[in-house]
Image 1 (tube, rainbow, N blue to C red):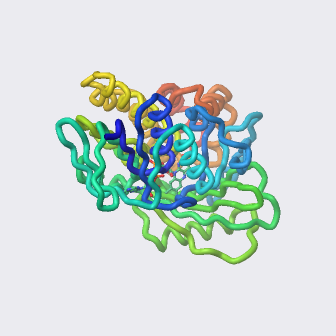
Image 2: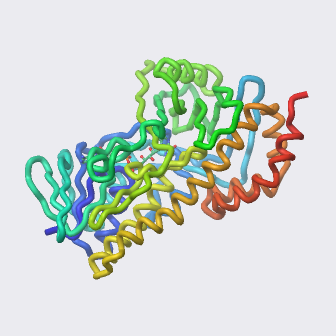
Image 3: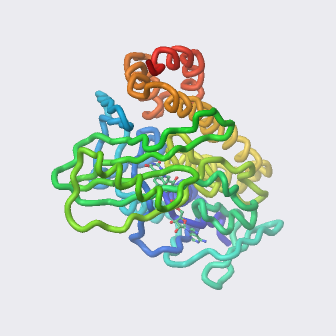
Length: 391
Ligand SMILES: Cc1cc2nc3c(=O)[nH]c(=O)nc-3n(C[C@H](O)[C@H](O)[C@H](O)COP(=O)(O)OP(=O)(O)OC[C@H]3O[C@@H](n4cnc5c(N)ncnc54)[C@H](O)[C@@H]3O)c2cc1C
């Protein structure tokens, strides 16, 4: 019997497996794909996310160290430049396979190319059906991403209206795209603040070495609207592509955390638990954080702490989900402001507010929390509003 079986070897599953194996647990990691596989993603690894890993991301995997942003709307374009790297860009094929191999190097047993079918929780163990064979473990971690069938069976369906959708394509560029991310505010956000987080259509260009990851994401848009947004983003970009145009891939993005993330013997991590922020994305940052907490909880359970999984759920609530909720609070405020004020002026006001801008960069680097940003946003609201009102 394994100590722990982990289903899904995206970044969160692989990292959790590596931590469990390093803690001396007999660990099994199962992935339905055979390496190398890829995930539809922009590939932004905030320094905050990279800092959660106990191994550095190899230089060969880092496409770019990003030091600048261009934020663009229909009638404005603002450029921000920073004196340090805020985010790496990576090709997810390379990152996921690095973390998968890292789990193996750490001592986890690996099964690739096999799907975890049913997971049945018993009093003293968990039974997993892996390609028709039943394997038992004392605990299980579900890291199957947002479309996880096992999370749905054990924890109920993920709310449909909390799923946004992202679409991306990676293309060769005529010249190297540099170290600047472009963000395109494609849709005029809702005019009325909503309680639920908003995710108006936005586009991006993430630079890779000699390539660029173009994409769009948003909540409540049709495929045709996403495709139209993607071609607008590509048309407005300063980066020119070359070679054949490929068909973009799309994938859902969770924008609201699940209420429950643990049973007696099963934990949810990453996208399976809905741990993505509606404002900043950072699925990798939140997901890796949950992997660290999950590995600790599994170790605790096997050490005899019967409350370890309940404590995991509480800790995810008081750290990761608290962060996501703070971002979810700021998100409608900022999106509403962007919808009603002169957006170019809004970003110029933000840029002139050095402490506020510093707090955003420190947050990207993992030195500041979303709670601090929320506390800084509330008193600034009147100034952000009145000084950037349309004349
Ligand atoms: C278009 C787009 C852009 C994004 N951009 C960013 C970004 O720039 N930065 C960022 O931080 N986040 C970004 N995200 C979010 C990020 O991709 C996710 O938060 C992250 O991949 C979550 O990792 P995960 O390991 O939880 O799940 P996943 O990466 O989805 O991995 C799940 C794994 O489980 C496997 N699996 C599923 N079911 C089974 C099964 N039954 N048996 C065995 N294996 C199974 C899958 O094959 C997969 O490998 C983006 C998402 C999208 C859609």
